[in-house]
Length: 411
Image (cartoon, rainbow, N blue to C red; front, side, top):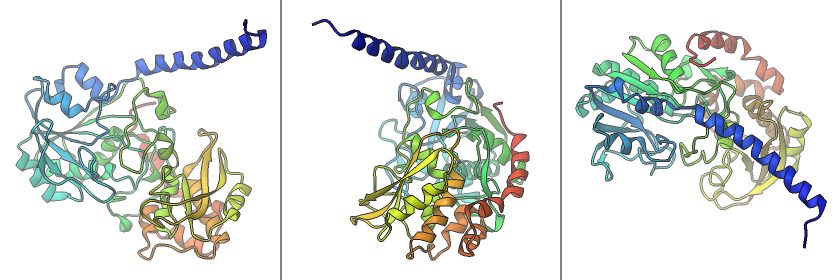
């Protein structure tokens, strides 16, 4: 049977729609090179004559999904002596709040040292004991102040300075773009491992840019620092423009879409609501027992840019409300260029408190550590709306944006 004219036109149109963006994307993908790709292409020149250790995790991969530790270990041009594992571990076997401990890597035989929750002189002593001259950092970040890998970077830079080591940062994309800094800036009295220094909640920087900022603004004495930037990355690029495979940087960061909302909805860790851990959509699903359709309705009434909310019911397999069916919302971002994750997170806190009588902050005021001060919590408790809460941090955010601008590598 011959296909109808409509079927032929439909197929041709579908082919045009699907292949044109793919060709353009492929061209972009060929243009982008990560810091590691550039380092390898240039023959590892910055590491010549150095005994090398590397801080990395499962995200430290090549475009063909080989781990860079395996690649470097097999390359005679690199004298790789040690690996340093952060939270979740070098090979990624540990859940949130865990690490792999000191061991020898079965694949390479390299000693693996545990850096999680270590800083200052104890971490410097680990670098000294490893016998390396240069510490390399290559971990995929997600763009939020409270994602701990950037503070592993900071702690390792400080420890490398104390131990008299060089420090090299291999850059990777910020998966949610580097267009702008958003949200409140940390107040130093609230410093913890989810925020060591005063940067904004969504920093809009890459790890190499952050390293430059840390070195000049926050370290008492700078570490001998070299950054290997990417080529072909634009500040407006989301992760899918990179052509790189996505490896979850942590067990509850399964997709780039998770990273897109995380800098706002992670605030629910500071409440008695589930932030979606134990589901297939962490940080996109939020809820608690007793929450119903009124929350999604209240959030949708705000007409927040780029996002809609769906009434949702789910049963987390671990963490809060394990094994119990709870009600809440699912976040659906329909225009990621217009979407503001931090404003959205605040709006969801404000509306949850209004529609659910059971709303409460975590007793340890973890929300203050996440937002960087007591202001967000106290304003919401006082009945402030979303715009009033967001207005409260604009002056300090403007100051951080001015500082941030000096350290950007990509225009």
